[in-house]
Length: 311
Image 1 (cartoon, rainbow, N blue to C red):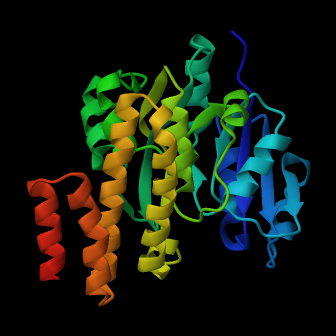
Image 2 (image 1 turned 90 degrees about the vertical axis):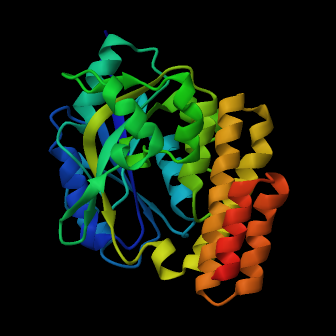
């Protein structure tokens, strides 16, 4: 069967300190990428020099006006020459079999709509903090179903809701055909948080076959410079705003996906309420969580409200 051609897109904004590691991890793949595209989103540091030092092994594309990670990823996808797209943030990295595990499966079944996998959480000092599948409801349910040799498992219909509500996959473990990506319109513009969930949910809603490699294929770096740690209230507000936009589109989604979006939005409101309460904005925190009680009256919503009232 035809070999998939992977275009790996690395958006970068002032990421000179970590970009080389990300690129090196793609170059070290046991299944070579068809191309590596670095999209420089108007960096003011030495990102251009880092990317260009790799020569012809990397396609370096620079945007002269900073437009955010969604615009950078979309631009990379538009310029890509491969038939499958993979993404990697400049501070994360691939494990050596990341592309091969997906390529081998696609050689056997080219009709797969999307592929994802487990990944590691690591701290800045390299310590392993955990694994994604075991940290999420859908992942824990899927692990026993994985093939003991290949780690492969199909995401069954009964896990779609929980996957959407709290997904165990991330952009750096996603493989999606370029055709499907462009048909869906790529990542949403104008959102700074949860834009990846917005796209992933729309992709799930339009997918019939979702393959999962139930072993780690990439590393997600946990650090203090993430948006949720720099300004938790602003990040959680933006999270809710993005999910509200997604919910407006969810009327056209299959029922399990709609339920998953609703669950994720309720969880986001709770996180916003906690962030507001911790910041001393108690009345705003109560207003944020009241929406959950109004939409889904019951013991769970009452307990959430009580926890915010108690502080």
